[in-house]
Every structure is written in structure tokens, then in C-alpha cells.
Length: 135
Image 1 (tube, rainbow, N blue to C red):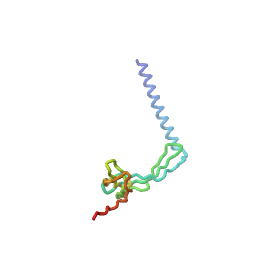
Image 2: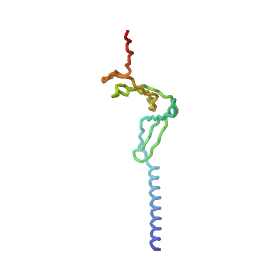
Image 3: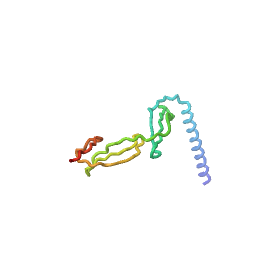
Image 4: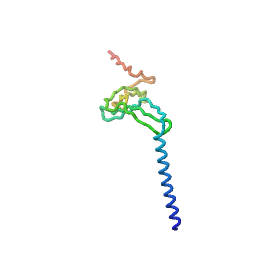
């Protein structure tokens, strides 16, 4: 039993030493790497903050083709007002046509509504014309 405990202790010490050596070798390689860098294009991320604003961050990423080096370079960061656009959501089986108003950056939905449609075929989106009154 005493020999078994001694062998387990030696094995664990060896395992600890091996882990430390491998960690130092990996760190030394990363420090001595002659980086072969490439940079991605501009990336934009938007997150809804409130009913009037979203946060915006624009950045590029730089990577090394040889090692695990990477760096995020922030170009712009801050808050912007929503920019709403009207989108045609298509014809529904119940003879209605759906529209949605949402922010074209963070996808916050401002409103959704349906109009009566005689289709299919549907009326062209955004071409709603007033119906003439019968006299």
C-alpha cells in the first residue's frame, strides 16, 4: 500500500511538471511567432436598448495564420436612434396582406398590421390606392 501511494505521488508530480513544461512551450511559441496577419472587413453589431435607441459597435478583427493571436480593433461604438422601414410580409390565407415596420439595423418591430386583400394575386406592395367612392 505504501509503494502504491509513493508511485501515485510520483506520477502526479510528473503530470504536473509535464503540464507546466507544455504551457511554457506554447507561450514561448506565441511570443516568438513571426505573425502572418490578416484583417477581416468591418463588422457591425446592433442591439436594441430601448424603444428609441440601439447600441452600435463597429470593429475589425486581426488574426495570425500561424498561431492563435487575434486582436479586435473597435472603430466606432455608441448609441443610435432606430431607423424604421416598412416591409411587405406577404399574402395570408385569410385574404389579408401583412406589413411590418421595423428597424433596419437591430430588427426592433415598431408595428405590424394587416390590410384586406382580394388576392391572390395580391396587390403590389406599397401601391395602395384609395378606392373611388360610388356616387
